[in-house]
Length: 82
Image (cartoon, rainbow, N blue to C red; front, side, top):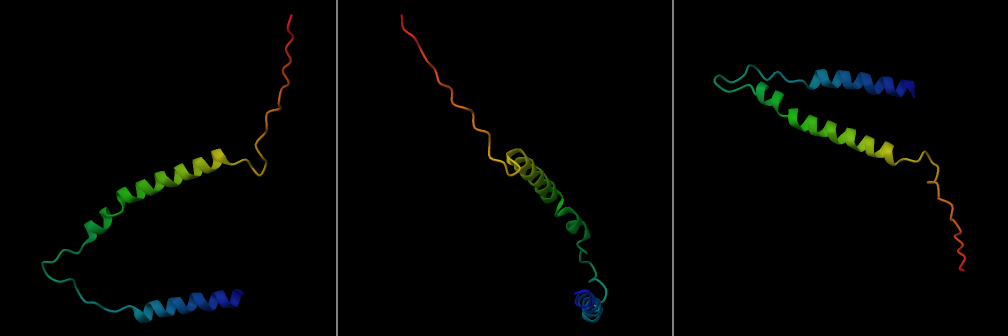
């Protein structure tokens, strides 16, 4: 298993270097897109984080650790009439 994992990792290192193409310099007058790439995920990451925290809180609050919920004992009510 270790050998298979080592072969897979080494082949990805070799393939990524071999497939990397030299695209040259950026086109003159065109935006590089760095600012757009930095701004894309801010709101999305915040919403995903809040959703994940909410899901974890709901899961923890509703879990019973494998034990069924306790059942309240039924009470017998007796009445006497005079």
